Image 1: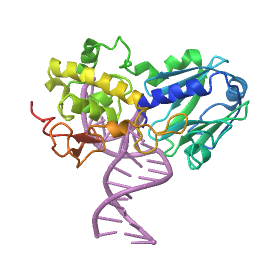
Image 2 (image 1 turned 120 degrees about the vertical axis):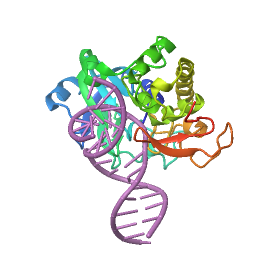
Image 3 (image 1 turned 180 degrees about the vertical axis):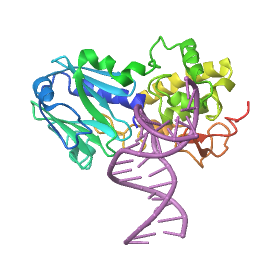
Image 4 (image 1 turned 120 degrees about the horizontal axis):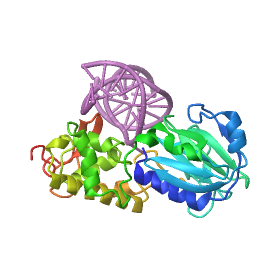
Length: 290
DNA sequence: CACTTGACCTGTCCGC
DNA sequence: TGCGGACAGGTCAAGT
């Protein structure tokens, strides 16, 4: 899914599109996608205005004037797409996603008072939208345990090494995917950061030197920033708040490049399974033994 | 306890 | 063309 750069891109898009708008109506086809008490929805969502958009880890937070917040998790295939009045406007060819919504993946439709819409689409139905009091967002079980934001200044190499070292027996890839170690890394950026650090994903954390972990810390930050610059990665489903694809995938060094030549040494990129996930490596640049 | 695997869903792709 | 199985960017529960 959408990992940190993708959710950040959606957040930035929504900031430009829906701040100040008033929600006049909401409809959902799936209680799992929108498991909220209808009375609370009626009282605190309908008629509220969008005040602020935030992101914490891979969770999108839409703060409302009623002191309630829409928490949105896109999981694997979720999308949040705003469609304005002019569907056929500049930059939107007629076959653009925004001209086809709602479609059979649409789970929740928000209607604003100006008759424009925001769609929560989710093919696999793993994602969700929850309406919670703003003051209680941090008490959500996931928010309680999720680790630090990697792009905050306070995420120093020391903080990273201390936290990841708690997963000493796990493979380094599993540790990076562990959201309690640090927030926002998923399968794409785990593979990309490990390649850039010349570390094999199946090496155990306790086998890594402090120097290697220092390098990994820096590469995580670099790859996340680069991807945000490119508007995130679109492998299959991901689109930003305007329904457009991200381009980081064109700059990926290993992800989805199995069978192609490593940009560093020319060796064929291999695909294997580490931490139960498809994993892309260059076995020359990322030797299993160190 | 630490770590790994399976489940949640639907769609797509690949081999027979 | 049809069918079965594997797989897909996340997270949590259950299993070892």
